[in-house]
Each structure stands twice: as structure tokens, then as C-alpha cells.
Length: 99
Image (cartoon, rainbow, N blue to C red; front, side, top):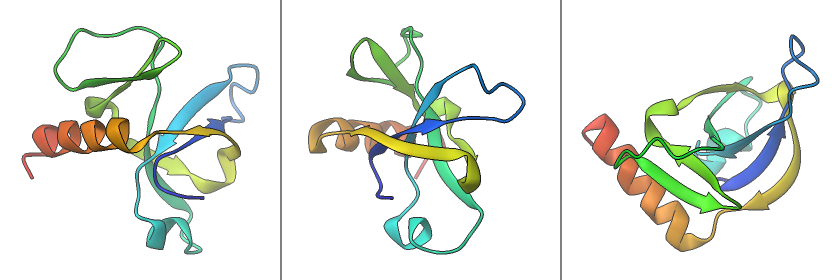
């Protein structure tokens, strides 16, 4: 798993609801045995906020949705953000977190 990858994410409580997340934790954390990673679940609609970054196929990563992802629920790779989109998302995260 690498930072910027798009992955399937399946919660056992809602296995029929397919989610896609973008991984945002560092590759050091992603390569570790830690049970939690950082990421954002993609939205199907744009909230119209400056912290929303279009990622393609009509989907949006909203920096305000940064959350922990349970490693065991992270599934197959379904894509990856290009450098430009990942850079825009990094900027939105810095703004959201005042970094």
C-alpha cells in the first residue's frame, strides 16, 4: 500500500456498500504492522467547499473527512491519484489542519 492509492474499503457492518478511500498516511506507516491508517473516503458529490478536491470520475476527496481506516478493511487497489491531485489534496489538508 502506498500513499495516494485509491483502495476499496469494506466495513463488515455494511458489506454491500462499496466505498473507495484514498490512503494518506505515510508509506512508513502503510508498510508497518499498525492496524490503523489515515485516509479519506471519496464522495460522489462535491460539497462546494475549498477543501474539496476532485479526483476524477465525478468523485471528490474532502479534506474535512480525514479519518482512521482499519487496515483489515482496506481492500484491493482500484487506482491512484496523480501528482497534481495528490498535491492539491495535501494543500487542502494543510489548510484544514492549519499546518
